[in-house]
Length: 544
View 1 (cartoon, rainbow, N blue to C red):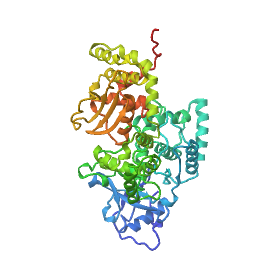
View 2 (view 1 turned 120 degrees about the vertical axis):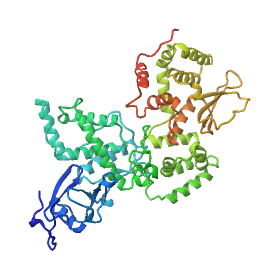
View 3 (view 1 turned 45 degrees about the vertical axis):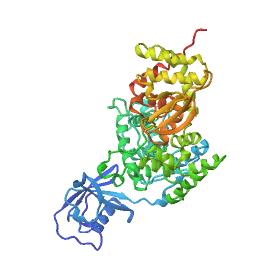
View 4 (view 1 turned 180 degrees about the vertical axis):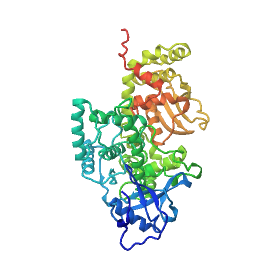
């Protein structure tokens, strides 16, 4: 639709200027051409009035941004129309009323509350007519999410009119195989899917986008794309662009998980969007949560100082757990954004290195249990894993035979230790990179040279169990554990301290994460995928 003389706002006059055309991004899915026969107006208010009348926008509910080619085609706030020329691009940025945002309180320990919050989220979105209404889930203690990525993605319910179109389209598709041709429902579908994805992750992987797209065409086969190799590749690409736009909206509302990656928050040498991205990479659900409602940075710092005294008291686990839960958000922001050393963290957050708090912190980050999950899946794999590793030849066979000598002391802990150590060798990695045997009567030596190690000290007699000490960045963080438990809690510390896996043990830790902890297991490396497929066979039954 062109802007004509009859559309000129009352009381406004235009000097004779050269006509101009502007490209206008009204919404993510609506891009229009605005013709200005009297040229670009002299003031921003005049241009806003023209845009408001043409696109039927509500006054005071939007601002205009313009694309600056000198800064990599980034959008900036339009302060003067002198910044505009013919065929430039402007963008309508809708102002979101923060009071209209609905926060749904969930409880990590109650699945019924989680289900209720999800249904409330779907209902409130279905009744909303604005694509700019953003609904967040913000539990009481500041955790943004209360569930990890599902094995099968649940497609949400769309608006009533969208559901009616899809129902009719599915009937037609089942009769003659004709796909749905209407594009009017596309914005609603993408908006609801973006909201649902964000309930699990802020930065989905390609495998997760594919899972959502596949689940969508399974539930609504009329949306299948005839020209796509898998019927949903186009949906994957649409979802990627939509999630980018959705993150931009949330970042403007101060969501810390997204705000941390804004250009304003980055260092001078990292002023590019993809440089040093801080995001969940190991299946974290709550990577960088917001502060609890009503809490400030100063209040949480006082809680941290109180923790320093509480951790020195005896029989005080309940108060420690409560304060650790309360300070979770400020601790994560410190760890993720500042990346302090392990020794500094141990000094500032000593409670974080208690075994029980390691498990609690892991649960806050991933919403899953640590030790019980790790041990249960390890035990499940052992009957199939042991005959597999024993089939190795060459130097690996010799190393595995030496490790198997430990089974002379046949205890549950020993069998688990043997399985883990044999697994490292089977994966072609050096077990000495993770485990180091120490004489109980000798000194452990220089700890600074040990980046990530589990020191194993054998008992004084053959029947005494082995004891371990966990070292990270030259700092002793745990001691007095058996080997399987030390491995589980080491994984908990890697998540709690936001550490990367050692390169020389990347396959071992990938198995720990994706097979024993079942986190982000949709896509594995070829070596781990091969191991997982081999372990799906029949369990080994030893001869009697």
